[in-house]
Amino acid sequence: MHWGSPVYLNFLILLPVLAIFFIFAAARKRQAMKNFGDSVILEKLSSSKSLIKERWRRVLLISAVGFLIISLARPQIGTRLTMTRRQGVDVMIAIDTSLSMLTEDIKPNRLEKAKLEISSLIDKLKGDRVGILTFAGDSFVQCPLTLDYNAAKMFLGIIEVGMMPKPGTAIGEAIRTATESFIKKERKYKILILLTDGEDHETDPVQAAQDARKEGVIIYTIGIGTKSGEPIPVVDEEGRIIGHKKDKDGNVVLSKLDDAALQKIALVTNGKYYNATPGEFELDKIYDEISKMQRKELSNRLFTQYEDRFQYFLAIALAFLCIEFAIGDRKRK
Image 1: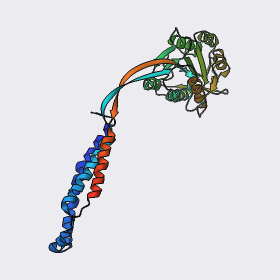
Image 2: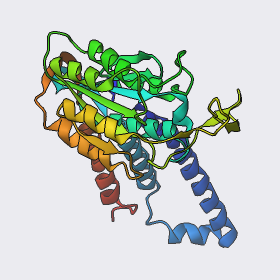
Image 3: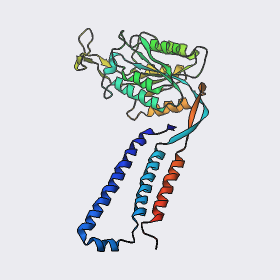
Image 4: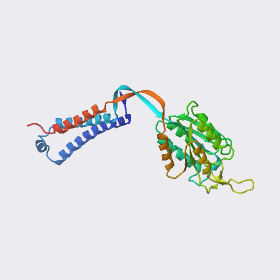
């Protein structure tokens, strides 16, 4: 026998507790009657009550509770084979981990906001494979495409600024790495979601997007930051802000959102650009776009499904309760 919700079996410990309660209550009742008055008179007054029926009612009540608990634990007897098919698209998510992502023009900072957006998007996916790529001056696939969303969120949790050895913001390199992570022979079912502040003047991200389009990749970009910008914090080993980044002339560097570049990247691949919002409405729009796309078959799986039989135990519990109610506690005349 298999159990669908075995945790409810722990409540079976209530049965001996209930039995002890009934025994204790009966003893207290007898003692109270002795203290109330003459035992002979009380015995005559209560002669119509059947002690045997009263005991049977308690047994039936305890048994009904036991079968009810068993039914809640969902006993499963017998199996059947079921084929499941999962269809979806491949979604690679690229997240910027450069130093500018510590800027706090979006609270708590750009990186944490990006991670919240990714986590919310993963929660929305149904049957799609998801992967995570981090980039700064270079890029690396932290989590290959997978159907295991919990694993993807585990990798997401360890992402932090400085994890990439080379500084900078190489968006073009990230697009090329993401393109290589998809299946080469396919020319569709490929989605790249890029979360960054958009500051890249070295790796030609627009050309990288054009190359990605040839491979069937559609890029959605999410701008993390504001156009006005803020200074880039400098933190110590314990994560405390100890100052702000300065240029070679000693001036504080402002990091600003370059949404124009991100719009071009998305436009080249027939994707769309969105600015990050507190309500994360852009995620709903991106997911709606993804859900409308043609989907491929990602997996076929034959698994054993157990048959629920809780209804039989529930019926027995209800029958015992009906019998307990019907027999009463009086002797037959």
